[in-house]
Image 1 (tube, rainbow, N blue to C red):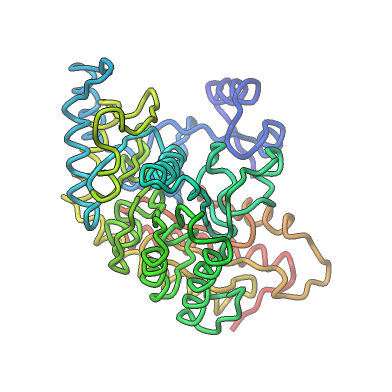
Image 2 (image 1 turned 90 degrees about the horizontal axis):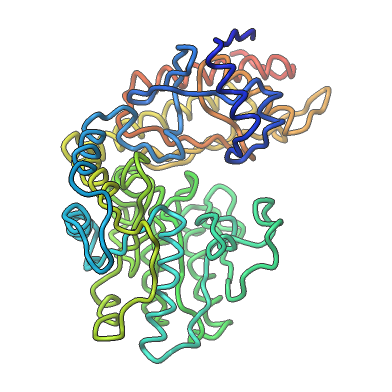
Amino acid sequence: MNIVNSDETVRLKDAALNHLWMHNRDWTEAAEEGGPLVVSTGHGIRVTDTDGKSWIDVNGGYSSVNVGFGRLEIAEAVNEQMHRITYFPQRTTTAPTALLAEKLAEITPGSLSRVFPVSGGSEANETSLKIARAYHNRRGEPERNKIISRMGSYHGATGGVLWLGGTDANSRCDYKPANPGFLYAPHPDPTRCELGGETPSECAVRCAEAVDKLIVENNPSTVAAVIAEPVANGIVPGDEYWPILREICDRHGVLLIADEVVTGFGRTGKMFGVDNWGVVPDIMSLGKGIVSSYLPIGASVVTEEVANHFVGKGNHFRHVFTFSGHPVSAAASLKNIEIIENESLVDNALEVGTYFKEQLEGLVVDHPLVGPVQGLGLILRMEIDISRVELADPLTHEAVSRKLNDCFTKHSLILALYGDALIFGPPLCITKQDVDEIVHAIDLSLWEVEGDLGIAQIG
């Protein structure tokens, strides 16, 4: 496809290619692909580039722009707060920060009520781990320092949480040695249960029991916490998983950390992912949707029972980030949560997400490359697997991914296949009409790629 860039776009692309270190790509790759795409405005689920072309952002940033782009109410709240006070003296707070903590205590489940603000999801998980270890130390059990996560999970990119999820991923190989004290449990993926479960329920029970076994084998008195995402990249565990996990942690005196950085603030069709199973974790990590990525902010929220171990002179939590509790970010977050509640975006995520999943499932019938579809609310995944078909001219998965991604670009979708699945996390304001447009573009892209591969099937 021939793309004619304006002089301003060329100048901005050159600036990026010459000086900017972007996420998850290098500048030579970006240049070969004609990029990077430079976006200038946005509204809802759509953004416009510097040449005036409109694109659908199928993942809303990093599944994080929950209220959609272009919400002037948030910009106005930020402007108003900037005119009042932009930071705070040491050992003080501000109105929006205090009110945000109060709001989070109100909407999080159970006795989660004490909020430590941070700058984003990775810092939230760092903070949650430190709270868990400090909690046990305050209770006279300093040997409780091991952390259990699920193999293949992702909890952030900072040094303290990078090794959660395993030690062999490409994203971690540059940073060895791995942190000590991390243990790994199986992921409760019902479509390919590594413990042989043949139903979602069977897989959920076996994977939860594997956590129990891991705790016992490693001496329960040395295990501090289990951390898990309620729904990870669209993989939804069987309904038994989270309640059993809660019971196991209670039985062994282990804290349960719910990483709600992606799933929080409506993405699963509930305000928080754990609400789907009526489970209250001891600690909850928040980010992304807490402010729909309008400004950097996250939080670690703990139960009253945990927080009570950090009171008294000299007993405070020894932890700080310069931008923790920033008043401007807090003001943006408060307005963001207000929009989510006033516009019933949690309900919309459930209704439109159910419709989106049904439409994706319809592609399985016509497209041999398409595998199982999973998800809950507006966090969905559709597997793309070239091993499902026989090719006359075998191609690598990377080559097929490149072909498919080029087609998505042609159809004005900001969407890319990484690994073996397409992940969908659009803004929660998406409509069924938007879904139809997205699925139609994916359908056309699949037909084109499968036609090139000689595996298109009709009827």
